[in-house]
Amino acid sequence: MKITVDRSKCTGLGICESLAPDVFEVNDEGELVLKTQTVPPGTLSDVEEAIAGCPTEALRLEP
Amino acid sequence: MGTRRLVVVGASLAGLRAVEAARKGGFEGRITLVGAEPHLPYDRPPLSKQFLDANGADVPPPTFRTEEMLRTDLGAELLLGAPATCLDTAARTVVVGERPIGYDALVIATGAIARRLPGTEGLAGVHTLRTLDDAAAVRRALDAGARTVVIGAGFIGAETAAAARKRGLDVVVVEAQATPLVRAVGRTMGGALASLHRRHGTDLRCGLSVTALEGDGRVERVRLSDGSVLDADLVVVGTGAVPATDWLVGTGLTLDDGVVCDETLFTGAEGVYAAGDVARWHNPVFDRPMRLEHWTSAAEQGALAARNALNPGAAKGYATVPYFWSDQYDTRIQFVGVPDAEEIVVADGDIERDHQGVALYRAGDRLVGALAVNRPTEIMKYRRLVARGASWEEGLAFARSRSDSRQTADV
Image 1 (cartoon, rainbow over the protein chains, first blue to last red):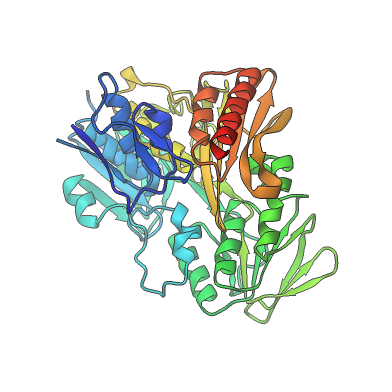
Image 2: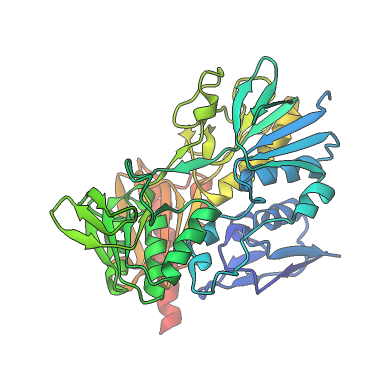
């Protein structure tokens, strides 16, 4: 499973970072950085919550 | 499980998420979504931000899902354009228009209603900014170059002022408190953020109230308590919102600035849960009842209320560190936690001078809140600290280490 971010939608609000900090981090410029593109073991439910919690629906899990 | 019909009253974010969570959880019964407005569920944060930009009248509304997706993919019956007016918890019905609708599980997500200025109902050019129709009317007035007066320097007021300034329009913001944003971030930091308005050419007048709106059918002037008079074509009232509970008076539900719920968003009436701006629930992170008007909690509570309503035996509690954001001028303001503090320290940067930095909020020996101004990389790190009950000392030490590493990086 690959995590993707739609840059045209993401505004760097950071809810994903608070839910899954091993995967997501907003940088100084307010841009979302994916620390990894694959879901680290044991974090799938956090990542799913982060995807569901994104106000701009910018995140996806792709096979 | 005997649940055959889920009724969700309120077709905004929390209501939509309730419907989606029910289906995602495998519920195959009937779902009815009731909305007072004629519009499909739409997103509110953009209404006071991008939606007010000068892009003409054809900007599509920030609708979450198409009608097709709601009706077909989610299999929801949509009853839009009339509010629910009555609830009978014994008969298990809600009334919409003249029609009683039976439920097995009910999610109340009726949100909040913007406060209006008493006595201004018949005056054109005076608007609140809560609904899509409100926002469209405000945008039309801005398109026409309105001289704008904003009443209330909270987030809605500040964002509206920023939108007017972005178009080069004159705007005055009138605030009854001594500083902007008192309810959101407290008086001290509200004061530090006042300079943001002045730097962008907004005329901010604090400590004043409005004594009269005048005009012949349409607003022309605003009179203030210091005797001054402002010419105005558009008045935007941003003085907060009250939970939409009128329809629930006398139904047996406990109402106290919202529908009172337990930790699981259960209202006490069988099968009835509440979510979003209308819900006052017990938040275990701070061990007290709270009612939030934030996007994040509305989304999360909506989903949880539906899951709990459909499976009360396995109901889960809702614990959260409140989070909200606001975009004003070129500045992003983010806040986590609660603003009621015994001490507030700007622990990183300089918020008043540079509009960049982090302020920490202390209650007892605990870190209870953090404000980040143009520091998007910092805010969620504090949300996690607040969530795990970090001490004040821990918060300060973390801020020091972040500030030090920033300075090292800048050299």
